[in-house]
Length: 302
Ligand SMILES: NC(=O)c1ccc[n+]([C@@H]2O[C@H](COP(=O)([O-])OP(=O)(O)OC[C@H]3O[C@@H](n4cnc5c(N)ncnc54)[C@H](OP(=O)(O)O)[C@@H]3O)[C@@H](O)[C@H]2O)c1
Image (cartoon, rainbow, N blue to C red; front, top):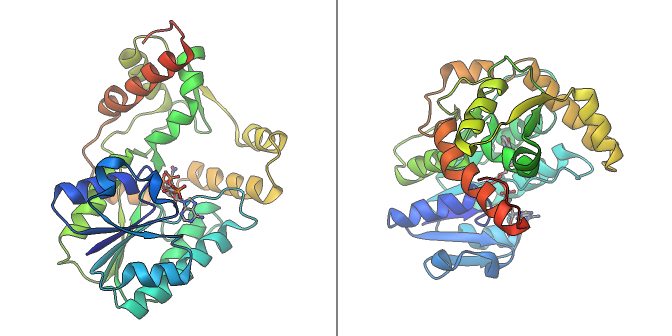
């Protein structure tokens, strides 16, 4: 039995689907079972509740061979570290009590970075806590999710522009969430691995923001340009949107660490995954842009 947390999220939902394709027995922990996709809901065991709740997780892990673990993002948490650690302590306790042998966790690339790195440091602290359970553990270490770009869909489609904080001519490490899920499923379906390690999971490209803009332009059939936002400008935008100061500080730490190269060592040692940026644009960005255009009734291509 493989237990999957966050099964309605963008990674967890793909993990569940792919495990079912492999014919595996899957149990999900979900706050609201009605949010599960219909095509999976009747094929999985369901434990309803939050995986941050000790009694829920104890029930979910009963007799489990392996666990897919993901702490839900909560940028507004008073302390991201405490948010991650609270979930991780619940996990480590339940994993140890229920004697789950193997755990695959969604962490971040950049293990070993010694300066504060906001949410990335919190993910590393989560890994250390989960390791106290004694289970064999793989902390998947990812850079920037390509799906983050979908938050800028409106700007990409209607204004022909997207923004990041990096320089236009410096390659950005990225990963498609389908490749994260696939890596997790490979580990969860072959439990011959042992020990506690982090595993960097990076996409195959080394594109700069300008290169990404060129690919998006070609695939969307309309010009898209890159507009760099400085970290200070981003912090000001967060403040003006009413974000708490803790969130601003942690975001600045994260972006600073990324600009200073927190991902570089892992990028150099990672085995590239399958989904390139052009494929992702064709199969995810373009369909999302089409749906957005249809929803808004815009005649804009695509
Ligand atoms: N974005 C990046 O570039 C990046 C890079 C590296 C690592 N990460 C990490 O990736 C993870 C995010 O993965 P994702 O994108 O798949 O997440 P997601 O799509 O936002 O999904 C979050 C999931 O958590 C569930 N959830 C939310 N609040 C919850 C709570 N209080 N208790 C229990 N479940 C809750 C949601 O389910 P319901 O709402 O249906 O209950 C949903 O299934 C985070 O840990 C983040 O740190 C992100």
